Image (tube, rainbow, N blue to C red):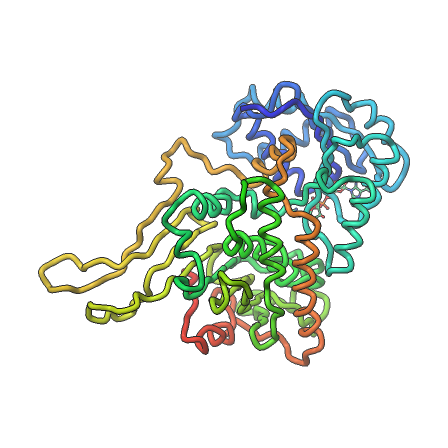
Length: 476
Ligand code: NAD
């Protein structure tokens, strides 16, 4: 179903995010018939460039970032024809009037700020002052949404000075992933899981976001951030919230976001003893410290945390979170590990791990339920564990093409649906929790533990679970 006609202005239209994600995603929606005839995309960036030159650069971006099989000459032409360009240095006065002249009064209007966050406040102000922003306009921003609580509050204040909360779309692209949305469907559209979804039946939860790449060329940026700010405060926190939240009364933006906020507010302050920081060493290739300016940097490229949610549903069930760079493989998953049966009538199975529900975000998006069955054959009542496996690609067939997170999110901006976007108070609550730990680390004389590239992280992270009689799932 096509969305309503729109004018989407992308500030930072010549940048990496716009070229690699936003425009290819819009192209795919055009291909799918969801972007209507009356849709227009207006690129805005500092470079002086003609409309034709910008259109050419977008053709090239599509060639680079959209697989050939998904490109047809007719759709590429139709898509590129709806693109326009205005040179605007957002810190100056030039270009705004020209931009104003390109916007239509009677269509949905959205501004995507694909620029450094230091420019968000300036752009919001200019949009308001120049009359470009109407009471219905939407403004889209993306991480990093602050560096700590104070800067996040400052950023929110700048945005809300000119826009209502209902107009602000804060992207966390993890929320646009199909499997992440599926977590809500799995929990709230099936009668099977919700009765078991609590501390009485769930032993613990593991959330893993492992990357195989290192910081490479991003060392300068990353060293000021670290895994806690770059991954935990936003993406992993969102996964934690969707896993742990109470069922919202309705599938509506504020019902869902209220429940997520309650989870963050119920998090126990985290103690340094329940955390492990790591930094990958060089082993043939450059280690973390060789990619950053400060040779004594204590910034973590890996973090593992034991987190407790103090409410009726989760008291006593820990959530273990881990994320890191230069690990064995690229893997993101949520693993819900159930408790053992209260009394076993069968002989012990060596290596028995018990029931688990694994939600795989990447690779091979899908869901696996680990079950115990009888080992087939005449050898007596021997048990073994098998996966009940649902990989989207297999279950839904070839015609199902998992859309990129940005495809869903950009269309939701146009539809005016904020369910998959973070509210300002959520972001601030997540920072408040994160800040406390960052301050403890800052005061600690300890350095992050070194770990080998291509492995599963520092030894202390294994010990974090061992001391509780548990173990991490393998990173294959
Ligand atoms: P980039 O450096 O590649 O592009 C920046 C864009 O901003 C360029 O188009 C540039 O012309 C424009 N710009 C800079 N100063 C300007 C000014 N004064 N007036 C007008 N335009 C100006 O950056 P990027 O990688 O595209 O990232 C943009 C934002 O998105 C950053 O805040 C980044 O942290 C965030 N982000 C990027 C990615 C990604 O994958 N690249 C992912 C998540 C978040």
